[in-house]
Image (cartoon, rainbow, N blue to C red; front, side, top):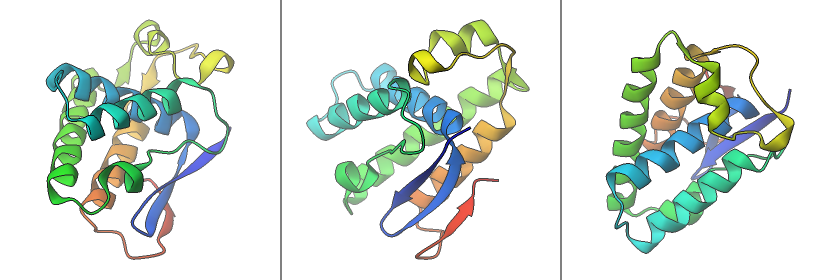
Length: 147
């Protein structure tokens, strides 16, 4: 099972690829559903997140946050809002996303499909780490795992 490093502004965390892929897929969908007429930077981020979620990369899934958010407070605030919405969405599925639904996301490319419902606990941990990273709560050089 591959792992990827999600980073932003010199800090980050390690996460299993499937967690990053499902998180980024849901983040892209949340942005598309709630902000259909998105600014160009968000449209580009959504496209990148969807590609990262569905291409089946092993060990190099990226959110490209530095590229899309930079240090722009408005962009970071919007990414935080979308992330918190994804967390609430995951909570509605707790304790697990039904396997048919999660397989419909297309995450992991053709290599991956889930043969059981996907527990939301690890995805919520990924989301908490992602939100903490956006808030600047990780110390520079952090390389811990999403818990």
